[in-house]
Image (cartoon, rainbow, N blue to C red):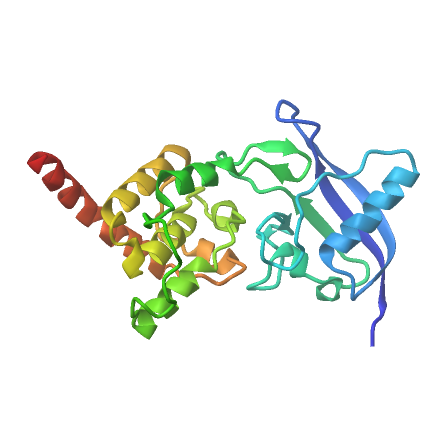
Length: 258
């Protein structure tokens, strides 16, 4: 049976733009259903702010189904909030209690500069994907789905890695601001499959070195796995590191022959 939470206090980060220092503002939500999602609660707050002639809080959102990776909030110091394996848009107010004070911030990472309020620029992720997140495929008719046999353990591992939605929680949670879980997932889901072998070592070298130009270094804290809304394992980082070491030998050997 649903109930209403009363007197929820929100401490929300407000920042007019990248050059602004930013500050917290406090708002009270007098009554909210525990069935409301966290983003629906912010919608209600914004409706009240607009009706009072004030500026709405800017935050990222799109599908609201835990698929697109757009939602990106630090809630009480935790990426996506207190519920493990859940994106912000899937978090419901029943995880909180009447009278709670909830602190809401944007991702805090130098590679994700704040655009406004709770919205950050995550285009550094796009640069990593552009560096090698593709496969070469001959044009023409689509081949049969089962034309290339793939062992089930390999297919399962590739699909687990492909669950990454690119939200950036791994970076926000990492004390070093590293993007190794994101990059490892993008590398693994292509490098594990037969279709990804042609670019395998060129891909991992290009993606890792692009990552290193934007993000900090991984020192195996494991916070990225804990914060990931898709519970992607840090095993993908080990796979990426292994392929990267091989790439430094294979790519130079190929270059010497050319």
